[in-house]
Length: 614
Image (cartoon, rainbow, N blue to C red; front, side, top):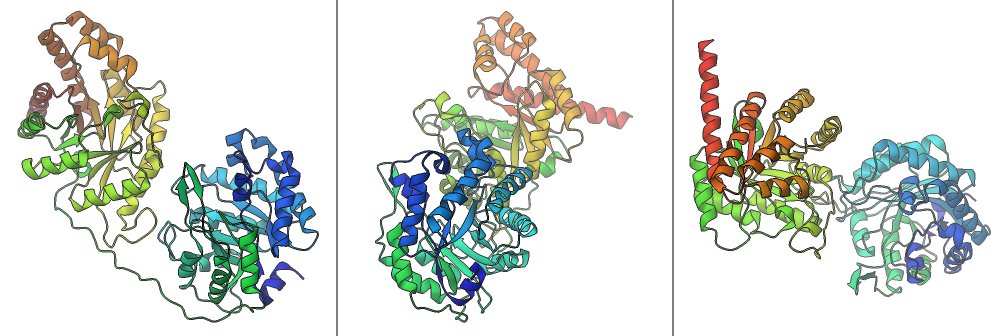
């Protein structure tokens, strides 16, 4: 009897975690490589699950794709590893259990690890390897990214008539990462050719039951559930799952009552959990009717607009000036507020606040942005790095920014911690700048990182960074184009110290319909020039600039005069080609910036006068 014939008539018991079992035995490398190096161990785990009551087992091939194997230098072993995974499962099964070819998702939670084409190519390669060995079906599991899952389901259905089990992974009960409700997602997957749709990983049994309450069923609806053993606890640097396997006996009955016909286990589950599942569903027929409990669908309100133009909107029409004034490293903010007030009076459009630049702790930029906004009436532009906050902290930070009415942002990766004041600190980097841009724009649709309704749309206007100080500017521009696709509304460049580079930048970006703010930062001394050129990532000074600063010597006034002369030349060139000017204040010396702002105003007046005369 085939897998589909069996699942029509009974609730099938699947196996539990392979990775958790191997990890508990001290394995801390590619689990899939063990198909080649430790075949007896893999075969033994399969046999143990079958002995515990599993009707269905999965091959040890979850991460056996080109992209994931490349982390271990095993990318050329895709065929060998997948082939061995099927043969070991079949040897263990001896026709006592169905063997499903396991293909895991490539993209992780909020992380895009490969391009769409790479995902498809990698999936096809692994799929062919499993099909050639005669599996009984294909198990697609741990797919956070629904677009990736629909893409591979299409490919699998085109290539085989075998049963396809498609499991999504959720952050929130009943809702996918993209905000799609689980019932709608399952309908789409079935329409694409999936025979069984389900949920695995991330959640324990209770949350999966809650998620499935909203899914209608009938006699032709086949659902799957592979819950984690429990929510994990963190002990001495190790994630552990601590619930009693007996709990799964009652959980299996609850899952069956929701219409689930294939019940196994994911992270933390063992043969004892599977034995409890088998006991829980023993003698129970599949359910074809149930009461559906709809997930609340909250109205997402439009964000409250301030009525003011965004910086991107302004810069498309006229000269727009933003100035960076780094928050203090100490608690005396009097000089900072004095400088911010002076800059406002000089006519800036926004004050930008870095996010612990050079990985050195300063007063939180959210706090300083709130102060300058409320006390001085200055529009703040807050930088967000991927370095300091995990996804939880980042989501919380963004919710706070929106609530305070701070909507202008710059999304950047951030300098690594080892260059800062606390080199022993950990860098987070849950996401990169591309994904951060995407997640910020997701908030603008009213959805959280996890796909939950925020009940109101955020209204962030977000910039991305561009480093033009590279040998191949065309490559940097292609990277910029990718950031624009991910949601950037405008661009802020690293400091530029060459008029030729500004002109080159204009030529390289003339096809882009997006405002670019050219970064200009005065130099304070020859020592400062050498530090910036040799030690700060993303900043390159020309030999002429370094020579002119060296000639100025140690005389502070002379150095400032020379620096301002060079900065004026850059400002004039930038103003000729771009509406956006981004001035960066060195060491709180905002007086230098004010002089440059005055020069910009004079330049604009002169330009307007010439336009009138012509």
